[in-house]
Length: 163
Image (cartoon, rainbow, N blue to C red):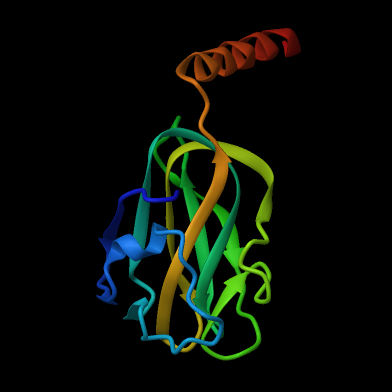
């Protein structure tokens, strides 16, 4: 997701530019939740990262306010619906903390299965009603257009064999 466009698709946001969410820079652990972050109140705000094309997303790293829970969704290419991908749990320490490992910004949370998508969303789902994000990294592979077509054909063949 490095350098990709971020938009607010629901609710409101304050603080830093939305582009800071995908700039590849983490704040020092423990940074105040309103210092250099995108912050908001309530559970209605949702942020969307346009991945710039179809990507196989395998994992993510999120730096967010420590005592809140967030959710990441991916867009199902077949239906257009957003589907749960990762519940980013609250963690110890104060201020901004990375997940999955508050002590290591480089540790990636790998999903049970990778997903093909062109966008992800993130928002708060619980906590103290004062939420903030400073970095959202989605890790994966950008398949070549022919690879996406081959994956689609392979899926059709596999479906025929099962019948």
